[in-house]
Length: 227
Ligand SMILES: Nc1ncnc2c1ncn2[C@@H]1O[C@H](COP(=O)(O)OP(=O)(O)O)[C@@H](O)[C@H]1O
Ligand SMILES: [Mg+2]
Image (cartoon, rainbow, N blue to C red):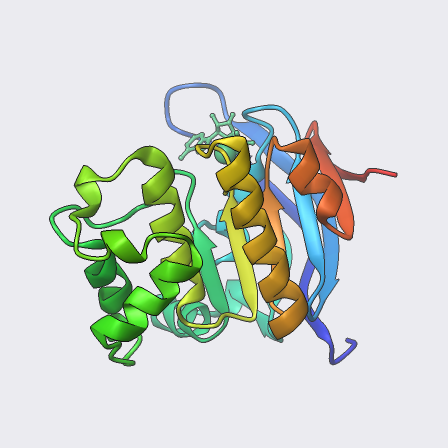
């Protein structure tokens, strides 16, 4: 494997069975390779499997067959604690539903994320990262009292506070007005260029997808490269 390879998805298959509907094959033979600092967009209609693929890459969701190599480690071989360590070492994740902790301020959400990673973060440092997403003045605000767009920006701030090598972002501009969306896109690509943070973005935003080096559509369980 090329030493620059940070992600290699090898013949991935996943069957879904929620115990109610008939089981179905969400992915069949998905292959994808990514090297340091690349940017990839995942597009496709709702329900095609963008979010689930991001979760699989992050080791948050199991798969049926094949292998996912992340920073040289085969995910199928790792137990939960090792997956946690791998995530905290290399990954930032912006969830579609944000997954912020209500009852805590924006700054505290960032501080808690770092605390769990064993890296205490001062209020001033948390505020500096919130400033990057335009929310320095909301650092003390309970995240439950922020708008959807503001919560999304806190989620991005939390994902980048650890300076990850790979940022997985699920519809990161989905709740933002066009101007704020562009600002957030600019920030992600600035991080990508300046710090070589690789990006995988699941998105319906065609402008955002067009900024990525590569774009794949998920259709009927397979990835198709867009020209
Ligand atoms: N936990 C689950 N159990 C069963 N089916 C699921 C589960 N999570 C997602 N799905 C199904 O998998 C498919 C892909 O979902 P998802 O990855 O969220 O798509 P997208 O992000 O592209 O909208 C959908 O048909 C969805 O209903
Ligand atoms: Mg989704």
